[in-house]
Amino acid sequence: FLFSGMLLRGWSKPVSTCSSISLGVRMYTSDISDSEYSQVVHSMLELLSDKLLEIEDEKEIPGFDVQYGDGVLRADLGGGNQYVINKQPPNKQIWLSSPLCGPKRYNWNRTEKKWVNTRDGHCLVSLVNDEIKQITDVDLGLSAEELYSEAIQHKE
Image 1 (cartoon, one colour):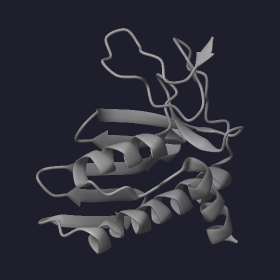
Image 2: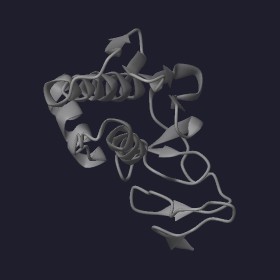
Image 3: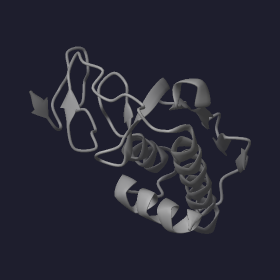
């Protein structure tokens, strides 16, 4: 069954999803070509980096720093809150290291045009947006659809 916003056993809050999840099944595989993977991941990480830099316009945060290069996005949001989002070309994934939820792995969902978690199907962009808001009190208003659309325009 596919549900959105449901509680998983052992979790205290609803799962944030792109639109659906599949429990117990690794439902998304990265059946994406090497060139498409490189284009999608680079454009997405570059645009996400730009959005994160907008936090400086909204709020002064001691220790704030955002760096992107060689497929690795690092965002230090002060107070020990550091994100690392990096590409993993051998398995065509994106890996996230979050100060709030720890490490996560994401596969590309070609149908929904989103990076989805390999375990519970939640959306990378939704999770990052929610956590950034929780840490900085700044809503970047990110959506996976918008980020993908901008990434496609960006590469053309």
